[in-house]
Image 1 (cartoon, rainbow, N blue to C red):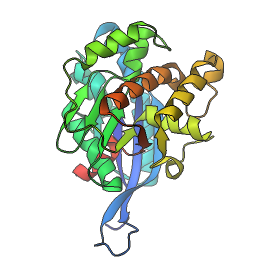
Image 2: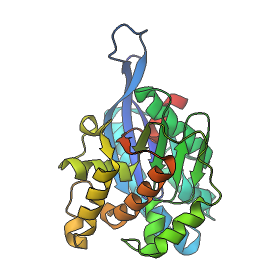
Image 3: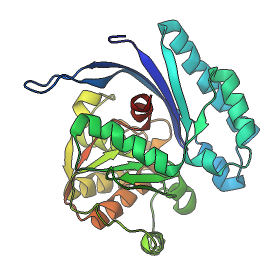
Length: 298
């Protein structure tokens, strides 16, 4: 079982991620030996399931076909590498889809494993677990996805039905004056008790894209991103830099390929609002997430 490769698939509202990883001994001296997950291969494909949900409340046949092509590619990669797929999960878009069974049946045929639709609370807990294993307890995790945002401190976790893709569909690429009212209404019923003034770790596509632009990385490198500390002023500088670019130039920035350039500014606006509610001046980026949590769960 040592270093045996395992895989999970995270099917989100904006993108699908294949993770291949292995449990390996942690490199810590003077501490009781333990194993942590080490990623070996990660593949991201844009699916944008959330667009259909916001337009019609169901996943279209065309989108299902695109999703199945992605899942078939993932299955073929796993078969070629001889890797066991342990779990597949679907999140906010599928939580709201009227035709859940139709999508699940199609994905099962393509992936040879039936995904499960997890709740927002489950997603928050699994995300927290994945970051905790690398960075310890006493933290707060924020996962900004395409259709929802999960926040957890380990003891408490919840999901807010706000994500970068959902905001983009409602406000366009750059939020305008309506954003202030939107945030006020969104936060009206949410309590952040027990989560303020704690170390914050941001995960998800918004965080990864932010880190890549901030560090001018030409390609994803989890070792260069993991644990990266940024300040609110850093966030403001990156947001301004991206906002001042044309749509075409924005799409050429590292980390903003495959449609991420459309939604990134909305995600950064939303991140700033969350950090202000959590009353922190700095935060860290983590490349962990639901796909890792699914393996810890098993």
